[in-house]
Image (cartoon, helix red, strand yellow):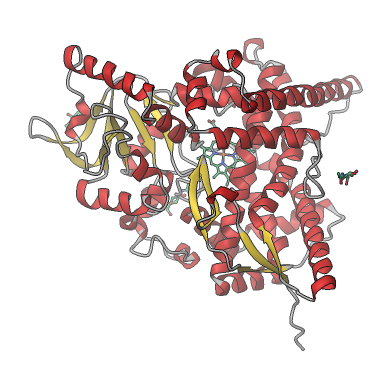
Length: 559
Ligand code: HEM
Ligand SMILES: *[C@@H]1O[C@H](CO)[C@@H](O)[C@H](O)[C@H]1NC(C)=O
Ligand SMILES: *[C@@H]1O[C@H](CO)[C@@H](O)[C@H](O)[C@H]1NC(C)=O
Ligand SMILES: *[C@@H]1O[C@H](CO)[C@@H](O)[C@H](O)[C@H]1NC(C)=O
C-alpha cells in the first residue's frame, strides 16, 4: 500500500545513523566503482533538502498537487528526484506510457524489501508482500474468490451491515433528541466507517462476526485493530526502522509496542486458525456427503480453489499462506474503504447540491425487501447502474485516493518507454530512457488523478459532472477502474476494488437515503499517515478524526 513510499522514505531519509551510513557507502560506490547513473538524462527540479531530498514535498498531500503540477509544467513527465542523499536518484513517472509500462512489468519493478519486511512482520507473507512464483501461486488461488459472480453473493451481507449502522445511528440521534431536543448529532464519521468496514471485511474475508458497530469488545477485532494502529503510529519512527534493518532487535529489546503486536498476532493465530480449521472440516464434510459447501466468504472460496482437483500439488497454499492472506484482506480492505467512504461523505457535506441530487436519485430507486437476499441483490444491480451515484464515487475516488502513492525498485537494468521525447546525453531525442537496477520508482496515484493537463484546469475540484464529458486525454491513463490510479494498474493492481465499490455504493445508499450530512465547526484537513487520513486542523495529537453533523432525513410529503 502507501507503505512502500512511506516506509522506504523514512527508512532511508531519517537523519540518523542509517542515512549517514548509506551516504558514505553510496559515495564510495559512486566515486570508485559505478558508471554514471543513466537516470541523469532526466531533469531534476530544485527543492531537494540535503537529507530527505524531494520526498517530503511529493508525499505531503497539502503540497503534492502543486508540486506535481509544477514538475510537469516545467520539467516534463519523467522526473529525476533526489532521495536521501545527492547520489540517490529516483524516478517519478507522471507519464501515462511510462507508468503503464512499470505497472505491467511487475516482475522487474518489485516492492522494496524494506516495506515488504515491515508488512510481513505485521500480517505475514500474503499478496501485498510476496514476489515471484510465491506471489503468482497465491494470486492464482485468490483470484476466483474475487470474481464478479462470487462478489455478488456478498451484497446482502454488506447491505445488512449498512442497516445495522443506520439503526445504531438512529438510536443515538433519538437519544440525543430526547435529552437535549437537538436533532443533528456530531459524529466522528471516520471512526464509524472504520467500525462498519471492519465488520464487513470480517464477514467477507473470514465469515466472522466482529459486531464492531454494536461495540468494540470482540477479541479478534481488537487484535487486528490494535495491531494495525500500532503499526501505523509506529511507521517512520527510528525504532521501527531499527526493527526493519535488524530484525533481532525487537526480540532482544522488546518494547511495549512490539509486545502489543506479538500479542495481537497470538490472538489472531489462535482465533483465525481455528476458523480456518472449521471451514476446512465443513468443506470436507460437504464433499463426503456429496453436497458442495455453500460458504461464499473469501476464506471458503480460497480453500475451495486450493482444493480444486486440477491444481497441481506444488501450486497449493499452506494453512499459513491462507492465514496470511486473510490478514492481508483485513489490512488492505478495512481502512482503505472506510477512508474512501469518509472522504466521500465529507465531500457531499461540502457540496449540498451534489448530496441532494444523489439523494433524489437514490430515493427514486425502489427500496429492497431487506429480508430477501434476491431482492437486495436486484436492488444492488439497480444501484450499480445509477449514473449520478457512479459519478460521485468516481469523482471522490479520483480526488482523494486513500493510497496516495506507492514505491517500487528496479530489480534489473531496463529501458522505459515514454510518451514525450527525452533528450539523451548524445543530444539525440528518444522515446525511452534507461534505468539501473536498484533505482527506486514512485507510483503517483494522486499525481495522476489530479493532473490538470489530463483532467482539465478544474482537476483539483469536486465536480461529479465531469464524468459525463471527459477530456480525451483521460482514456490513456492506466488504471483498473475508470482510468483512475486509485486502485493502481496492471497485474498487481488492487484485487479488492470491486469489493470496495460494492461497500461504497451500498453504504452510500443506506446512509444518504436516511441522513443528511453537514460539516461541523471543526475544519478537517488531509494528512498522509500510511494512508490519506482526515485530521481536525491543528489537532493532530487527537489522531485521525472526521467530525460531521448527521441529521435524520425526513422526506417531504408531496401530493
Ligand atoms: C477504496 C478502497 C481501496 C483502495 C483505494 C485500494 C488500493 C490499492 C492499491 C493502490 C493497491 C496497490 C498497492 C501497491 O502496489 O503498492 C492495492 C493492492 C491490493 N488491495 Fe486494495 N484497495 C482498496 C480496497 C481493497 C479491499 C476491500 C481489498 C480486499 C478485500 C483489497 C485487497 C488488496 C490486495 C490483496 C492487494 C494486493 C494485490 C497484489 O499485489 O496482487 N483492497 N489496493
Ligand atoms: C457487546 O455486544 C455483544 C452483542 O451485541 C454483547 O453480548 C456484549 O455484552 C457487549 N459487550 C459490551 C461490553 O457491551
Ligand atoms: C529507444 O529508442 C531508440 C531511438 O528511438 C530506439 O532505437 C531503441 O530501440 C529504443 N530502445 C528500446 C529498448 O525500446
Ligand atoms: C479508459 O477510458 C477509455 C475511454 O473512455 C475506456 O474505453 C476504457 O474502458 C477506460 N479504462 C478503464 C479501465 O476503465
